[in-house]
Length: 325
Ligand SMILES: Nc1ncnc2c1ncn2[C@@H]1O[C@H](COP(=O)(O)OP(=O)(O)O)[C@@H](O)[C@H]1O
Ligand SMILES: [Mg+2]
Figure: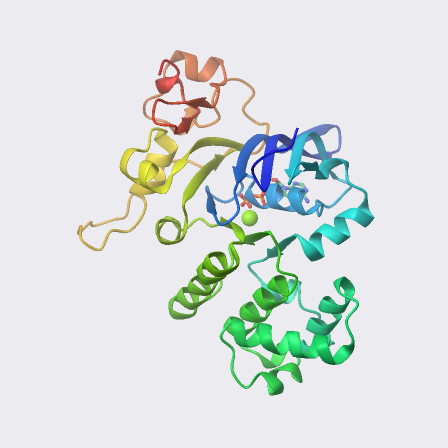
């Protein structure tokens, strides 16, 4: 059956083997993204956001990592069943990813131009000159100037913000259907961060690229995203439109995250933070993994895992307070 979503993730489980236990880093995740849409994935560090995106890209370090269950449907094709050869093709042409630290995807010993041209020519059998022109165009598109000079530079000669733009240019050279951006601006200062986000938004508008934006910054989500999936301990605990989530979050974890956002209008002595820490994957055997940190927890919460259920307005929530709706 063909899915109408460009990317549709169903019951994804990605585990890491360590000695004799399995660490369920991603533990039954469901979400989808449509063409032209920006989906935000939020949650504290260690919730499984990066492992989810690496799973989509077929880049989970294996061993010890392994997708043990579920489907990753890209235009209906299940990527969990794709060969490495097919995945290389998908990664270059259809789904691109940008990371927090651009140096991990730029090769320090090659000039920017060489890397861009090589990337373009792997996927299009174009002559060098045409690939060069395309590379120059992409660098201009991401707002870089003096691009001929840039083409001739090594990554270390660029600032962090410039490298991040180059990485976006690189990701966009193949005109991907899906762009996964994992904390793309965390390492950058606020002004550059804003420019990079505007750039991504523009690519999303102009080229209809579906974007999955992973961030722990709810301010960015409010500005950039159409929909949000909130992850906790390897699971999606709430999902809905940005408007619904910010106005009417149902899961106590989501409420806690929203409460932790600094609000310029409200003067507080100290910023709220959710008490406690994200549990290690698999360490909570029974019930909701958020229960130990949740002020509303009652008996059911420590006994059985609630399901991700749809509420009357289309929002989804995994919480015993909302299992009746
Ligand atoms: N290579 C690995 N080996 C073992 N465990 C890992 C590995 N990579 C990630 N994990 C574990 O998977 C969980 C989710 O990690 P991650 O997806 O990076 O979280 P997030 O991106 O939300 O901060 C964490 O508990 C982390 O320790
Ligand atoms: Mg991460």
